[in-house]
Amino acid sequence: MTTTRTERVDMKLEVVVIGVSDVDRAKVFYERLGWRLDADFAKDDEFRVIQFTPHNSQASLIFGKGVTSMKPGSINSLTLAVDNIEAVRKDLIARGVKVSEVFHYAGGPFNNTGTNPRVSGHDAEGRSYFSFASFEDPDGNGYLLQEIQTRLPGREWKPTRAGGMDVATLAHLLHETEEHHGQYEKRHAKHNWWDWYAGYLNARLNGNSADEAAGAADRYMEQVLHILPL
Image (cartoon, rainbow, N blue to C red):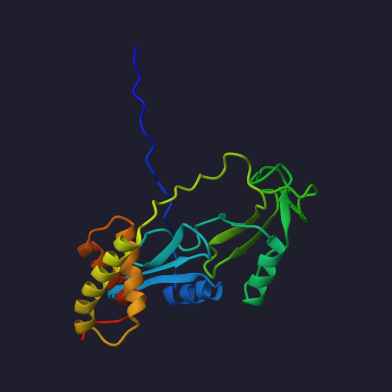
């Protein structure tokens, strides 16, 4: 009997969608957290999508109008990994966010069984994964801060290094970027060229065609920086 080995494919968690009742209020809250605003795009009065990304996170948060039928505040325990839970608590409190005291679970991480599953204070042994704090957005969508100072073996993907790019290839790519930006510059208001370059180069280095990269850079300028055609 023969078996066929299937190569694993990347499936990276990219976006978590939440429901909110007041889009502008939610936007103010997540800006206050210091998260990066990636997009705020409205098609008409029925649709608006906003995307935020926590600092150094590979996954983003999306909410808006016409985005989801999810009930506002129905998300619970979205977990944010931090390496110093006390420092993060102090930062959030300074930003006006109400954060719980540090706690641990009597039965181990995320074990909400029992009468009083949450026990006040840090994990007595100071273990990674065991100490938490919590906070909510204005609609009651709940977040957990989980302190992870040292990850357990096998809990991190090994990074894949991209092959090096020689100077000639880089020069060619920069020339290509300049040519496409020239067309964009003729049709749009005054802007920082490096913002468009960054969007274009990022897309090209991620395998997009020149036309796809130009489209990605255009969308970034319009949706994030609000640079519109003349």
